[in-house]
Image 1 (cartoon, helix red, strand yellow):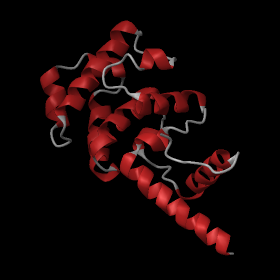
Image 2 (image 1 turned 120 degrees about the vertical axis):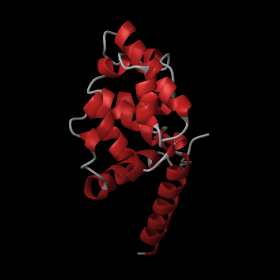
Image 3 (image 1 turned 30 degrees about the vertical axis):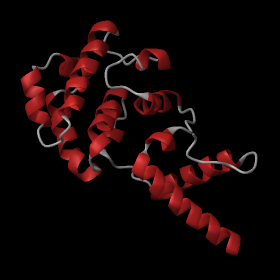
Image 4 (image 1 turned 60 degrees about the horizontal axis):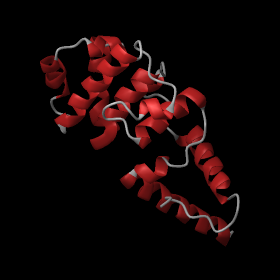
Length: 171
């Protein structure tokens, strides 16, 4: 079921426009995976951020990028080295999937993340949300399902926007 249920046509577009306008003004624009924004850096950050906060994941991300600057570098890494670098992020299945995915990208896709949804979804550990993030950064297409998969963040965002909409109606 969609995260947002519109009661009139075009409400989804208005919601998206409002959310993007908020991000332009108030969103974070200085995160290390945003500069330079590459599919590898975005993917790595998304995997790290699945079960933790930006503040906790950022130093891990910086250490990973320093040690394994490209997906090919990560693919060539020893399992034990990656697991040791991952220590403290928890959920070690994500680290194993990270390595499997990096190796598939390196060995089966020439070190370039695939361009199609179908190909991305064949990669270990890549689900609809991560695929959508990759596609968004490559094509800048709108992906309404982000909020469907963002669980706790979805609830926070929707409650905040619902409150703002309520305030707007009172004006």
